[in-house]
Every structure is written in structure tokens, then in C-alpha cells.
Length: 254
Image (cartoon, rainbow, N blue to C red):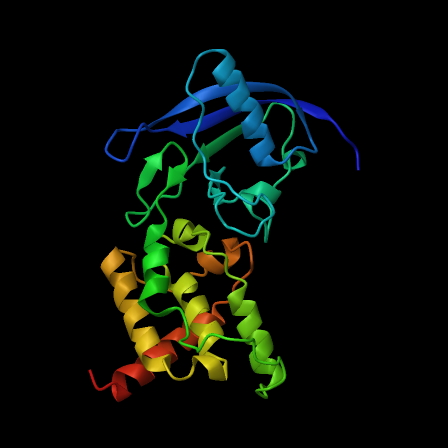
């Protein structure tokens, strides 16, 4: 793969805090390696800003391995940038060309208020998980992996849903700022397994209620969430969530 250097113009959203009015600001970075990750390029930019006495750009990151979901950036109109099934930290600068102007902004959703610059508050997802995204088990040694027979198709579907990293790209991509793909993934990976069956009804009811309470929008099945999900979570999970919710609504004692 050919290595090259490039000079770029960055149009970055700057916002002091949640209540402040933000605006885009232009920056110039030079001699950026095509093999850098997008976050490494931002590290270079922030070093420049520190040297000139300007406050560095705030952005969220942690593992930088596509696992934690923290690197939430809207890049040129797409969550996590132009590559499919990819997080921002895994996006490399070879996706761009010398002289390109790159527009970078935070997730746009009322339920994800901007903390500062490109960092948003995604604790709404945490509260949805706390509302029911767990199973109650006794502590002790782990049960043998083959102790409970589970059909392979169910195990595979559960594993695929459990790959959701809660980055929020589905919310950012949705015209309604819906969190249905996220919630459906969390409901599905437990509903498909026998360990999740005891709290099956209360889980889906509580998680959907918390999702609505947080102010996320409704799902209109446009599919933008699936198209931009870095872990390619399927829309089939939303169908499963609707089924689980309907069944729970009909059988619940509440």
C-alpha cells in the first residue's frame, strides 16, 4: 500500500459547554501521514494548538481499538466517517486525499447533549442498560459453557447482537434520533438465551420506557442506523424488540 503525506483543512465544531452556542472553526494540518488514524491526526492538531496557546479540541476516546465506542465523531456527514463497519479510531487518513476539507462535528441528538467540542454525554445509554439490560445470577464459579444446550442459530444471533458497543452512531444517523437499534441489540442478545428468560418481560418494558424517558425519537425503519453501525447490527433486532415488547405488554401484570 502506497504511503503518502497530505495537507488538510479541518472544519471542526467548537463549543465551550452544553449551554454555550457553538460554531465551526477552520484549522490547517500539514504533513499528515496516510497511515495515521483519524484520532492520531487530531492528536497532531491538538499539539499544534497547545504550542500556539489555543485550547485543544476535546474529543472522546479510550481503547482506540474499535471496542469501547467512545470515539463518536460525525465526519463529512457520516458517523465514524466514510468507511463501512468502522469506528473513528480505526479510520485511517488514507481515506482522504491531499488538500481535502474534512468537516468534523459531534453527534446531534437532544438525548446526547454536547459536553464540550466533539464530546457528548452518552449516559442516556447507561441508564437504559440500568433499566433492564442485565440478568440476575448467583455469584460463584462460572457455569460450564456447554451446561445449557442452546441452538446454534440462537447463539449466533445473540452473539451478533451483543457486538453492539453503544457508540451512538445509530442515533446520530437517524433523522429521528432513535435509539431503537441500540436497545433492540441489548434486548435481543439476552432474549435469545435461556439465561435472559426470567426477566424477559420486565426487561423490554423497562428499557423501552427508559428510552422514551431519555427523549430519543421513534423508529421509522429508514435503515440509516444499520447502514452506519460500525458493528453492522441488523435491523432484524428491531423487529425482535417489537415482538418482545408486544408480548410483554399483553402478558405483564403491571
